[in-house]
Length: 163
Image (cartoon, rainbow, N blue to C red; front, side):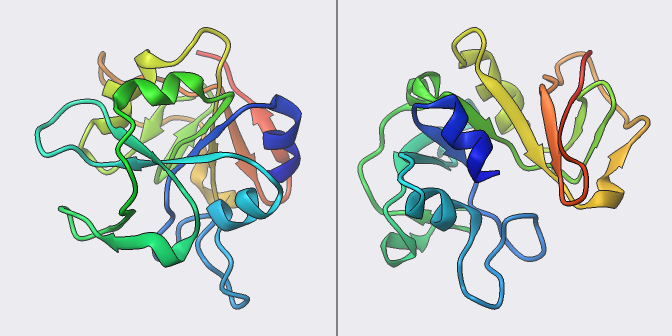
């Protein structure tokens, strides 16, 4: 995943993984955003807005800067950059419970990424890190769901998908 980010150049927008999500902190304590930061990437992480809409973004500087956010998940205490900051990202790593071969995501139902992904610059790669069993033939989808361009799997690596 680090090479995918390095190859793209530019900032990486990345969720803060929790629990058993891919990229969550392992026994060494490092998470995906920490690894990206250590590799020299500029890392943007989402902040859930007070009102439903696109995600806000802030620069990730490390776990030391995290505070408990409005939905009970950690988020950086740094300056809010606005929802448009994601348009500067060369790569956007999106969380999901599962993704199908057409890039449709099964998320947690908040719709934040479906409202955020349309803000991306044309050509921005969107990818979902998954566990091997989470890449499926088909997941339920609705008209407003925004597909992603790739999944990243432990065994297969980057797999590009198409709608």
